[in-house]
Image (cartoon, rainbow, N blue to C red; front, top):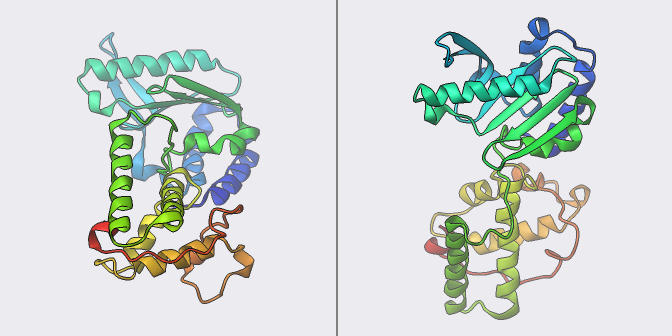
Length: 277
């Protein structure tokens, strides 16, 4: 099961403390990046390799310090060396990948580090974040792409994916209303579903927890989905220490959602296979 954000944040604090005195790139960078990926519960060797060769424009070969094809390129320097120079080197490597026709391998992210600082560059969004190692845990969500959490931008309703999502919610609304579930209960029910879908993708829940709950705890025909969702809403409205001990572990582990979103009692909706899908 993917690590929760609380676990990742605790790991990040330990990582920063362990590496606060590191100095030498050649002596320690590989151990540093192995431990870096461990912060997120990811084994580095499963996704990224060290010293990946790439032919430079001069015809000679350079070696990328750490390379996760299509996702991340890392350049590492010893403490006190220029991050700007390392970033220029990383950019040259990306240009070389393009020249070689390895377009599908070009990463979205660049990370530059000299142990003391970590600089994250998002090439798709054209944003940069430079943090000191001791503050790594405060900015851990910026690295959500490593454990696989999605980061959403609100308001981009023109995005075709978001438009289709709105259409799906509209279809679910109409199907429930035709089936006799309507009015305030219906509107509140849909807001709760929307929250759970958002929480699945943004780290409020552990990754895909809501999706897996539906897949693992309800029947394919959707006949028991309404009661299961009613139970879920009640659990989300209950502090963890006050929940029943016999709840399934994956349901009991969901966070307490403070506020009034799940406080009101709703009649449970009767759903079918298309609604579940």
